[in-house]
Image (cartoon, rainbow, N blue to C red; front, side, top):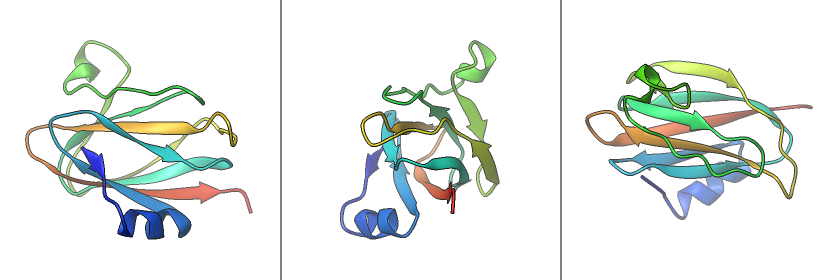
Length: 112
């Protein structure tokens, strides 16, 4: 999974990002001040939220053995609270595909 250049930068400025999800765990960085995110998976995937300053790794099927990743079915939107990071210790979200690749869309909820 990797961040997509170009449109990704535009999405970041507008309060959202997306990752192309594949068989390798990859991360995206959430800006400081975000307290929750809306997640939408175009294809089923496993998601992990890291602590501020940490780089998490998502693992497929890990919900059965650990509490680090959770399953997000395709076409389901889920809102989750995340730790609030700052400019030097930002929060990262990692994702990996379940059985097929797709996109994970992340929209921010910020304090106004």
